[in-house]
Length: 155
Image (cartoon, rainbow, N blue to C red; front, side, top):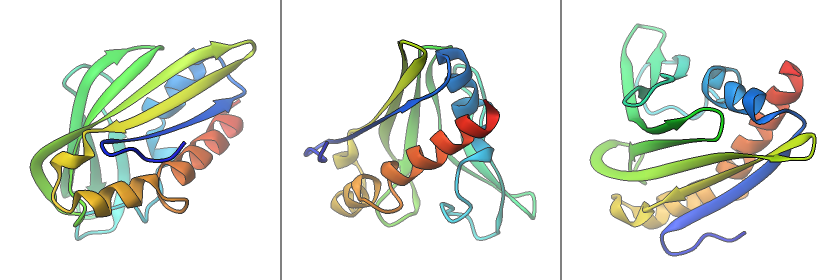
């Protein structure tokens, strides 16, 4: 689906239960998040979603530094998680916040994982951010491909 004025929506179907799909997305986030998707000065050692309401969504550098991208706004295991995103289109942290809503819906023996990155217009360089997260390369299309591969590997 194409990006709208305020949101990017992408989805993928994976060969896993909603419980397993949720587990890979949240608890094994580091296994599929690309090291190239970093905003910190130091090389990324780990990408983390703390699995609880109010948990942090961040990267830890090899030097121990942390760059907090956002926090967990909703945590409804294994059905949904919503994350705040505080990174603008200039790839700098900012107070402005968009939301990444992820739902996990059973589809027979598979799970449909739908991602909506909404309220992108709130950010600095919003058009650049919308283009990046909605683009064919590097955005949610690629991220969900990597996630799907991680689900298959965990399976």
